[in-house]
Length: 363
View (cartoon, rainbow, N blue to C red):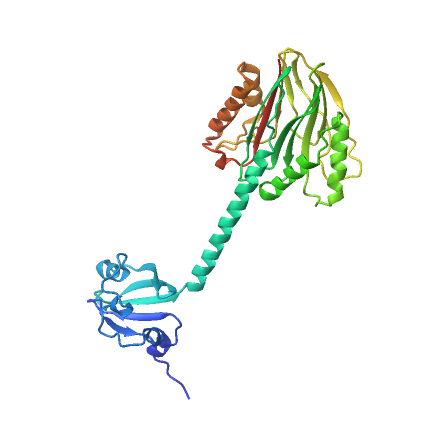
């Protein structure tokens, strides 16, 4: 035996509410799901009267559909429930609008989920703001005042950066300084900068010994092999102006320029990682003279790209360093301005990588 399914049976079987209005916006039909909610006769009533309203809402999709024959959608609150309401015209064979069919889909659970997600996002944003303040508070606040001047710029590409720089007094005659770049960006990278600052021993005069100790502490924790930190670490004797340095895989080596000529402090070394048992760090030394400057940087500034995918590069960077004679802080600001102009960048929000630079001057 073949059963015949009527159109009304299909519509009455729907969980969504369905109603039909005539061209005067009177209700001529509601399906079973909607009728059970309304609990009273609504046929012949104005569409807004079915929900105990005395007039249409400002964003009335029913009237819009009647006016121009378009299909419109909006969200509407009915009681304690949220609905997505879609209003579409019903046309006869000649294309004349003879009514409006409206479908109410309950999106209450979705709205509650959206609200919960927004609340969680707000909480996460608060946590990120706090973490950012913490990270910024760890940047050097005390700088040398005798025989040398140090300026630095720190611009993270995201809310939390993976670059870090620190300057600190080891004893009366020695200052330590390092620039670091953590693999990745965001929260995990920022946690590594906290690990770095809290773990590195600021009492040792040998950079190689300091990096070796840091390497061992890193390996005690058991991080994944794809997590690592590059660090260029130097110690300067502010009496003799001897700079001692060692490198843990930092690929942008500092540059000395000024009265001592031009020199890149190239030195091999593997990052702070768990790639091998003994990293084999060693110290190197160079003597500085009054007027010399030493430029430290992460790779963020040289790798800034323009619309043609061309990098700002080392040549443009060195051109600024060797031609500028102003104060270190002004030189760093000019480098950022030139790089941003080269790439068409208007704010740090557009950066793909962190920018960290420092300029040390012997005075």
